[in-house]
Image 1 (cartoon, rainbow, N blue to C red):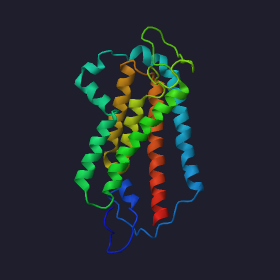
Image 2: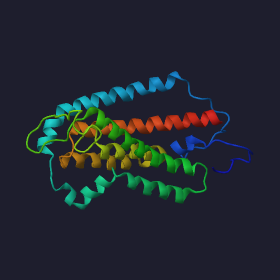
Image 3: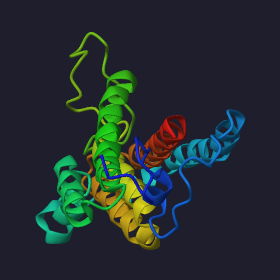
Image 4: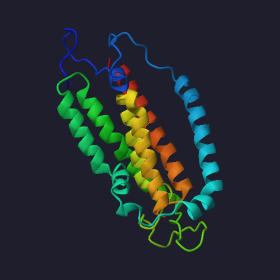
Length: 237
C-alpha cells in the first residue's frame, strides 16, 4: 500500500485516475463523486453495438481470409514469433514486473502493475470458458467450413477449439490495459495486438471471426476491470 499522499494521515485509496492517465494531476481523493449507476450502462451500449457489428462482418469475411491470408511458415520467422508472444500471458507478467520495478514506490505503482497483469489473465480465462461453451473447432486446412464439437466429446477440453482466440484475447486485453496506463503510446500496443491476431489467421489456427471476437472481448475486459477498480476507489475514499 503506498504512503498517504499530501500529508493526510490514515487509510487513503489509490487514485485510480492516475493509473488511467498518469500525466493528469491527482485531485483530492475525497472529493470525486462516485459514478452514477446509469452512466456506465449507457457508455457500454456503443462499444457493444460496434463489437457485434465487427464480429458479424468478420464472419462474412472468414472465407476470404481463410483462402488468402494463410502462411504456414509465419512462425518460422522472427517477427511472427515476436507477435505471437504478445498473446502469451507470461509476457505480460514480465511487463508488470518491469512497471513495478520502475515505478515503486510511486503512488499507484502496485495498481498499475497489477492491472496490466490481471487484465490479460482474466482475458485468457474468459477465452477458455467461452471456447468450452461455443465449441467451434479450429479451421480445417483443406476445406472451409464451421464445425462444432459435440458435448459428449471431451466436454472440458479446449484442445482444438478456436472461438474466441486465446492468444488474441490476451493480447488485446493487455494492449487495452497498457493504453490506459500509457495512453500516448496506445497505437503501439494495439498495433502489436493486431499483429498477434493476424498471425493466428495466417497460421490457420483461427478464423478471422475468432480473432475479431477476441479483440472486442479483450477491450471490453479491460474497460470493465478499470471501471470496477475506479468504483472500488470511490467506495473506499
